[in-house]
Structure formats: C-alpha cells, structure tokens
Image 1: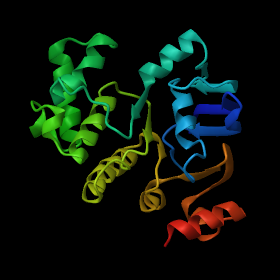
Image 2: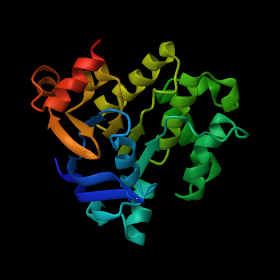
Image 3: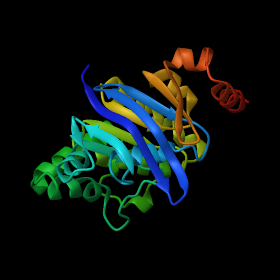
Image 4: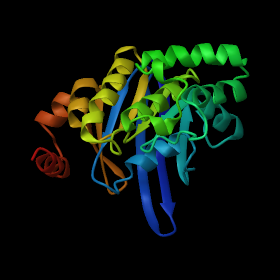
Amino acid sequence: MSEIIRLDNVGKHYDDFQVLQGINLSVRQGEKIVICGPSGSGKSTLIRCINRLNPHDSGTITVENQDVATKSGGDHVRREVGMVFQNFNLFPHLTVLENCTLAPMKVRGLSRKAAEELALRYLNRVHIGSQAHKKPGQLSGGQQQRVAIARALCMSPKVMLFDEPTSALDPEMVGEVLEVMTELAQDGMTMLCVTHEMGFARKVADRVVFMDAGQIVETASPAEFFDNPQHPRTRAFLSQIRH
C-alpha cells in the first residue's frame, strides 16, 4: 500500500510547554491506526495537527505528498481528510440532512439534489437515514455522533480522523458508534483514531501507537501491543486500564 500520511520530526508547543516532540509516523493507504495513551500525552493534538486545526511548529506533515503547512497543502487536507470530534459539533439550527449537505455544496460545488442524495446514502450507511429531517437536539448522543460520521463521509475523504469519538457518550451508546467505525474499517477506509476503547483497538487496528509526554513511546500490532508490550510505560498503562 502507498503512503498517504507522513510526519517527520513534528513538534508543537504552547509557550514553554512542549505538547509534541520528535513525532515520526507513516500511514499507508487503507491502514487503521489507533492512538492511545494517558490524558495530556498529545494524542488529540497530533491528529489535529494533521488536518491543520492546530498548526505544528516544527518538522513536516504531508498528506498525499503535499505539505499541509502550505496553502495548497492545507486546502488539500481540508478536502481529503475527514474529522469526527468528541462533541459532535453539529449545527443545532439545521436538520441532520442540512448538516450533511452544507460542505459538499459549499466546498465541492454539488447541487442541492446531488448533495442530498449523497447525504442520504451515507446516513443510511450509518443506520440513521430515518432521522434525516430531525434537528440534532432531537437525537441521542450516539445518533448525533453517527450523523457526525456521515457528515464527514459526505466529503468523500481519503482519510478519517477520530478524536475520542465515544468519550462523550453514555456507555450504552458507545457500541453503536464503534459498530459504524468497525464497518468503515472493514470497507478499507484509512483511519487514525484516538480512543480509550481497547477492545476496538484489538479488533480493528493494524497498528497501535502509544503516546506519553508528547512522544511516541511504542508502535506495534495489536497482538504485540496487548500481549507483549516492550516499554515499561506501555506496560504500566495497560496494567491500569485492564482493571
């Protein structure tokens, strides 16, 4: 598989606090990577730097060989990389359908009819097409997150980034969102997912990336990561989350 994302010696700081330091990561097309680690380890900042929500301060990030720090590269990443946030970020005054058609019409130039057909296809794919004409406030958290996934898919992205997509959900709603993400993975979508859902990581990931204190500490297959972690910090983290 060809490389689609590359990070070389990426750093990010806020004043004197180094959030990311010396990050090197290559992601191949179709690969599923789960990024995990303790709170404050830089996981969310890392994926937000990939799509330029948080510009990095040093090193280079390329998506399909385009430097995201350039204007053309930044425009490219906004078109080709979808993002699903922790807190849905849906427009409350728009219907589910309108939330999903806005970007394809504004950014990709689709007609309303074409955008609605596309949106309904993806809403049905995430099993929520029957809610298309409701407002987000009429839906459960799990339903809203599935709408957010459909909205991202409506841009036909080549990569999907997930920033702790289940952490704001009630426990009984987590499964329905993970099921949709698993289906996307099985369909071959390139995915980077920040999550604490270790069962999902073991089932879906090609590689698990463990971060601590702004650095990548360990990268391994799920079997190696969970059953034979190499770094003491990784072993300590896994011993805590298993209880």
